[in-house]
Image (cartoon, rainbow, N blue to C red; front, side, top):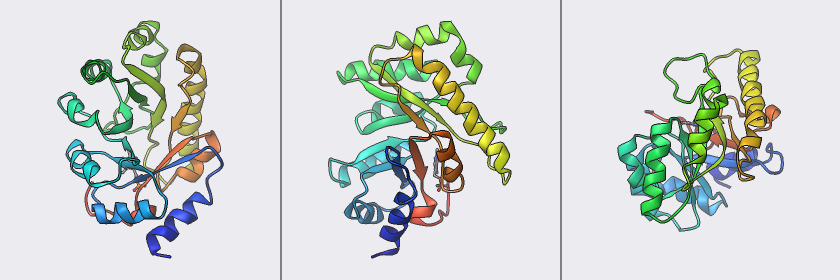
Length: 221
Ligand SMILES: *Cc1c(COP(=O)(O)O)cnc(C)c1O
């Protein structure tokens, strides 16, 4: 078995049933993505519109692409035809643009609401209190071509496991609090990366986004 196939298998063995592994292939060449595909992996994550648009046509049609990066409104049109799930819907303005472009494609865009759970300024997302606001929830529900499938969050980059666990616990609690306000499609909790997915699994993550533990370290972003 290749190192990559071995890495995938080792991670899959640690995932409970019902948890989906998103192999984060950003910055990695299509050749490596193909190798993961040949080992059985179907869900891949990209964080740049340009990269997704160039890689998607080079891979088989049954690949499920997850868009996990900050999405600018002027890139929605490019990303939408390829994305099986957008994890990073982080504002009403972005949701409005996703809705508009989904109307044009005569489709329904599947998204997760990204929530700011980390104690770091630079991370994106709705604040938990934004999503508890009835007015915000009502606006979101009026985007008829957007299907909200759950929440996504990134924990603080820290060695402090107690803090990471507390952030994941808070996101899980918010997920359960918000669930009654959405359709039955609201089932996904995307949390956990190479360094912290073992902690995210303790708080009912359903989608783990893992890059470097599969493909090796990246040189950039
Ligand atoms: C890069 C990235 C990941 C994967 O990070 P690793 O530490 O390589 O596993 C997960 N989620 C998001 C949003 C990312 O940008």
